[in-house]
Every structure is written in structure tokens, then in C-alpha cells.
Amino acid sequence: PATEEIEAAEATALWERKSLPDTGFKPSVVTRIPAQPDQNQYQQLGSVWLEIPALDITTSITGVPLEEGTWDVTWLANQVGWLEGSAFPSYQGNSVLTAHVYLPSGYPGPFVDLGQLTWDDQIIVHAYGRQYIYRVRANQIILPDDPLATRHEDYPWVTLLTCRGYNDSKEEYDYRIMVRGVLVDVKPDY
Image (cartoon, rainbow, N blue to C red):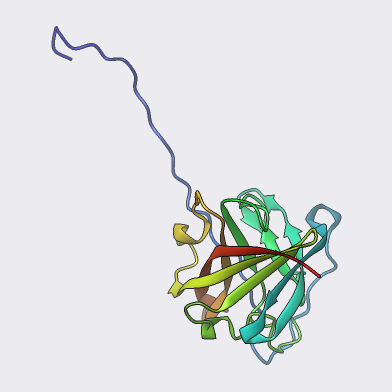
């Protein structure tokens, strides 16, 4: 620095791009998966569940732990997984929920038709006697490490994720479908 300048601080940051979970097995092929290890057990969230009327989906939400920078959703089956580290479903912030596009059986999973959601479709999180009603504001195809899916939000948002574009040569999905909705209403759950 010049003689009249003072160096007050120096800062550096390491930005890590987390890979989004691999939420699909090979379509139409049975995939054998091992028993779920104790350290990978999902967190039961009680009376928290998801409803997407346009896709005729009603299923429970379970917590998927963040372990060493990744989420292992292998054992979700027909459930939806809340990715630990994102906002808890129904809380302020970005709540990231994921489900399989294809199950280990090779049959379609809960989010096989996620790409069909359109502007203003409802996504409803039922939690603790209330309905948290979100409206779709975006439906995009993204890369597996796109930080937009897990970015923080100041307002209550929900982000739904699943895989898309199975690549036989790499034996993995090349893309993710990301649907984002903003909270528009909270009602009693009768």
C-alpha cells in the first residue's frame, strides 16, 4: 500500500459447489441396493407431508442428512426427502425437497412427471395442522451442480428436484429438473 493507505483486512473465501443428489435409478431395470446403513438413516418428520394436486401426489416427507457435503437418497422409495441444510419444510427460506424419477424396481418414482408442472400450479406442504400453499414460479432443467437449487432465500420458497436424461454410457443422469414455488397462503389443515 501507499504511505497514506492502511491495509485493514484481507479476506478469502472458498466456494464449494455441492452436487445435487442423484435421484433416480436406471429406467425399466431392476437395481439391487444394499440395506440402509445406520449412519444413513433418514429423520422421520412426523406429520409433515407433501401434496401436488396437478400430479396427483400425496406422500410423506423424510429428512435426508447432509454427510460430508452430499445427500444419499438411495433409500427414499416413494417418499420425498427434505435435504438437511435447506430450510425446514414450511419455514422461511428455501426448502429443498427431492424424490426419485425412477425407483430401484425400474418403475416410475414420485417425481417422474415433475417437469409437467407449470406456472401457478399448487405445491402444498402439510405440517403441524396447517397447509402451506406454494405456487410454481419456475420449472427448469439444470446441471447436477447448479447452485441455484440450494441458494438461500429471504422469503419462504420450496424447490423440488429430480433427475432427468439418463445417460447409458455414463450410467447416470446428466440433468436435474428443478421446480420452484413461493409461499402464497397458509390455511388450517382439516
